Each structure stands twice: as structure tokens, then as C-alpha cells.
Amino acid sequence: MIRITTTFRGRVQGVGFRATTAHCARGLAISGFVCNQSDGSVLCVAEGRLEDIEAFLDDVHHAMRSNIAAVESERSAATGEFKDFQVRRSPTKREA
Image 1 (cartoon, rainbow, N blue to C red):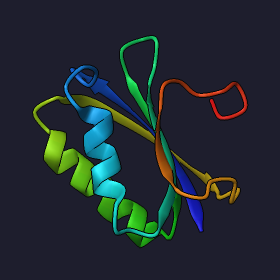
Image 2 (image 1 turned 45 degrees about the vertical axis):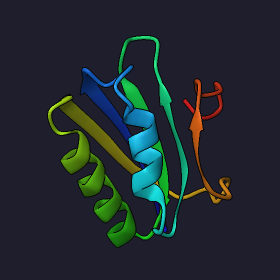
Image 3 (image 1 turned 180 degrees about the vertical axis):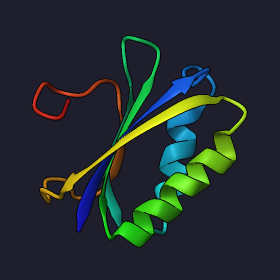
Image 4 (image 1 turned 60 degrees about the vertical axis):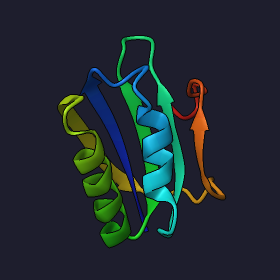
């Protein structure tokens, strides 16, 4: 189990990006959240098996490719703190 923290930049707010991301997470064994950031980017934290997270991120990129200008990702150890995948308004300091 791993965690991938991804920041999407471009025209990613106000275009259904978070809802699309949550839809892409359905049916996959991943947990975490997606939220808008004050700088206009979207933050996504996903935990699960690497294969599931890669499939999820590929689906998000495919669905929203015309809105994404840049993607930055970091891998780390999963914490197991999430029960499901949620759309959030903004991250807490602990999650940022």
C-alpha cells in the first residue's frame, strides 16, 4: 500500500474536476480525497495498491486532459487514515 499526493495545475477549478476525480475513484480499491487549493490547483491524495492508483490517475488525466497543464506527484507510505474517497473543500493542516 502506498500514498500518492498529486497536484493538478491548469484550468482545474470550476470545471467539475473534483467530481470527475471522485467518479474515477469509484470501483477501485483506493481511499483519500480531492480538494481545491487557494492557488487555483487541485490536490489529490490517494492510498491503495500502486496498480489501482496508477489506473485512477490515468483515468483522471484522460477525462480532464484538456484542463490539465501540469501534474506533480509524490509517493510515500500509506497511513491507512482514509476509509473511502471523498471530495473536500480544503485540506486540514495535517493532510497538506
